[in-house]
Image 1 (spheres, rainbow, N blue to C red):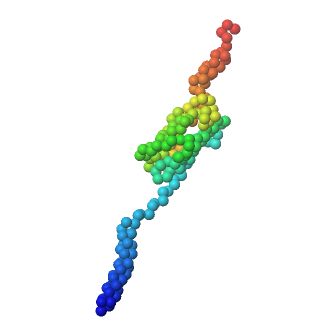
Image 2 (cartoon, rainbow, N blue to C red; image 1 turned 120 degrees about the vertical axis):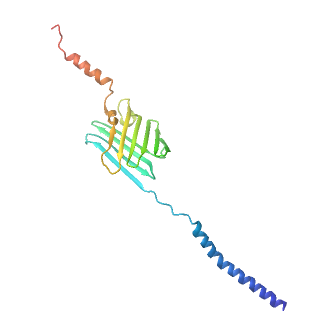
Image 3 (cartoon, one colour; image 1 turned 90 degrees about the horizontal axis):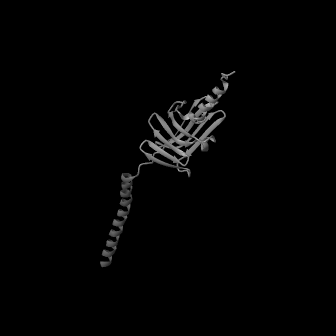
Length: 188
């Protein structure tokens, strides 16, 4: 009889264990649905580009924005025969990027860029960008702004194309020298 009781006790333990095994996966599955992480939303890469001017005299930019932050930009300007070309990308070895809200500051050894990503547009401020490095021109600085408006093909620029002009201090001096040479000698 003792043997039968032991067998019955073992059977009861096995049945209880089996019942427990079957209920754990259901409980674990239920727990998974409660704590299941939300699927990651894929960030959309936004590509913006615009141009201002003609084939012989123009400024253009291409911008990539991911998750509300500018990832890279390529600026190109031309005023025959001079051209300027700037390409900066986040996490490259040649620039440092810092973000604060909708503003991004990009620091390079050849000048700084301040970027403001607004709902309707992205505005770039070029601050003392080395004209010789990016344009292969005389020593000078590129300063000014360029704004890319979402959904428009034309850029808005302020003072940016001044980088293509000769040194403003030397141009008037040369002009006034020419005028002096063209005047007739009053003694003749």
